[in-house]
Figure 1: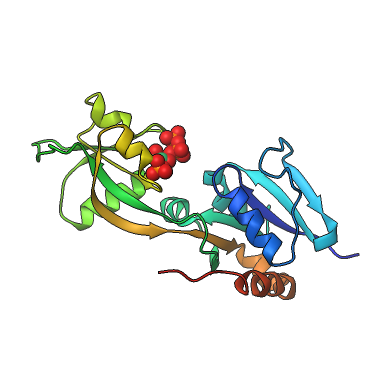
Figure 2: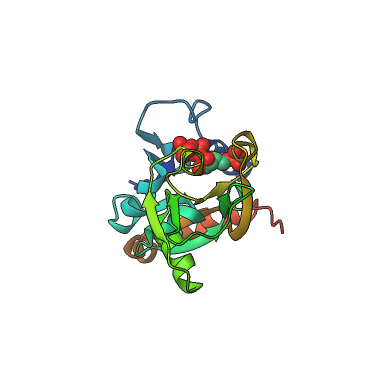
Length: 210
Ligand code: PRP
C-alpha cells in the first residue's frame, strides 16, 4: 500500500555521517551502507528507498523527480543550481569552499584558477571584478598550482590535510558547507505529509553549530 519515499544518497564522504543522523532519528539504515555496491536499497521498515548516487548527480535526480528527496553538500547544490527545494540544513560534513594557492602567490597578468566548481569560481571572481580563466578539473585539484596549470585553485577544505601535504595555503574562505536535504517540487506537494514527517524527525537530531 504505502509507497516508499525515494532518497538520493551521495556515495563517499557524506554517506556515513548521514547514516548516523538517520540512526539518531530512529531511521536505521543498513550497516554496510557505505561500502555496499548496491545502487537501489529499499528499506520498507522505515518507508524509504535509497538511490546511491554520485554526489554531483543528486540534484539532477531530484530535479527530474526520479527521487523525491536527496542529500547533498551545499558545494554541489550551489554549483549545480538545479530547480529543487532546499528543506533542511543537516549540519553534517562541515567544510568550506576556499581560494587556495602557493604561499608565495603573486597576482599575474592572465590569472588561471583550477577547480571542480567552475560555476562557483566564475561567479566569485566576476562579483569581485577580477578577470580569471577558470579551468575545470575533475579531482586532485591541489596538483594544478604545483605543476603550473593554474596559479590558484577553488576547492573544498575539510581537515586541511591535503593543503598542508602539498605545501599550499588557504587565501580566502568563500563560504561554509554542510549537507542539505533537498526535495523535488512536485513530490513536496504530492507527498507532503511523508516528507514533512521525515524532515521533522531529522530536524530533531540536527546539531546546530556555529
Ligand atoms: C576533496 C577536496 C580536497 C580534499 C579536502 O577531495 O577536493 O582535495 O578533499 O579535504 P581535506 O581538507 O580533509 O584534506 P576528494 O577527497 O573528494 O578527492 P578528489 O581530489 O579526487 O576530488
